[in-house]
Image (cartoon, rainbow over all chains, first blue to last red; front, side):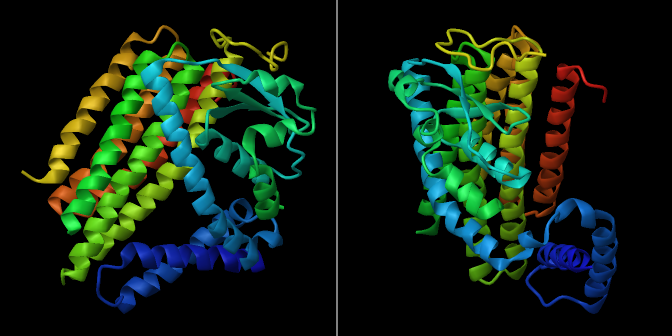
Length: 167
Length: 116
Length: 85
């Protein structure tokens, strides 16, 4: 029931934002929004929110706190790619990482973050939740790092952030 | 003043979008092309959508009330790009690997042998 | 001339360059990468056109286009993997 209410409120807020045109909403807009968000909430309550923990506001605040750092890494990534486009220096390879994440949401956040940050692109994931990452510039030092530290070496603190937000 | 900010945002957006298509031509295989085609277009589109958001907010501040919806809707388009683009890239990379396209010039391939 | 329209010309230029990759691409995933890039650039172009014409409806269309192009990409990827659709 709580999941249904959460989804409905989420849909209703989206509706209000989409129909806002500078003036206060009319009554017919609001009532149509309530009807449609109840229908959407009833259909998609099992898809959008899978666990009650996701509703806690702490997770959302953490997610917002994560965005500036993510944007900084993304800017760095783009200048890196710009450098490689212009000079043509690449040294690609596929490496295996074991981030030790438990559920699918945190793994999705980590994989998307990896794709948008310096020189890495997630290719595949196996049953034990190991990520296979295409790395555009494999450094020779990478092979000397121990297995536990490999994940930290490639994607710095992203696994910790994903664990805090998703689990 | 406001126009200068919009010019700068649009300029950065153009630079990265052009870079993405040039990288698409220059890189040797699918995976490196995905690097260029995903990261640079996402970053460039962020700046182009930011220019539209800034323009909408500015017109709204100047008294044209209905322009706030241009800013809000551009923001949602930006979120749609941010969420869908890396996921699509991941799907293409996995499909390319499973359909037997190997990375060229690779120094290491730890996924090898699991191609079933 | 509106600055948004001028930017749109550059976006169209990069769409043409990305289309060259989609036409040349030696393997099918190469073509899909080209098409995916073209999709993102078209979304950016639609946002610019909406801002140039002061019309919100183009940006609504771009949101729907983004979601539909994502579904298309995932479907093509699934097809390449050899799964049943």
